[in-house]
Length: 162
Image: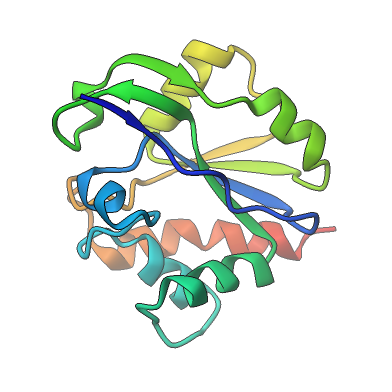
């Protein structure tokens, strides 16, 4: 089955870009980034900024934009039956050339796991900005929330830099 990712969350103030590979089945069905209840992404984001966790997707998006964080996926479309990145076939990357031309304030890329970085490097070759690979927030990546949160703290540090 051919599936497609979502448009990016970004505005003119976005300083950091977090890239996933492709939304999973639950995210696609809900039309929301990181919608799987066991995915730690949103819990990590709220914890980083000492905010009370919210289920409301508009509030989640507002938290990111208020903290100058953009999110998107490396892939625009692919064929995949499951939610696993390992099942991706016939992938097509998003248009990063235009994205970066429109979002010149972005200074660093964070990859949500190894796979987004691998797909970016495969299809787009050179990564145009400094980047960091963080542990995946996916429930399939069996690392404790506390360990993930500790490694994701680098986002806050990067935002504090000039």
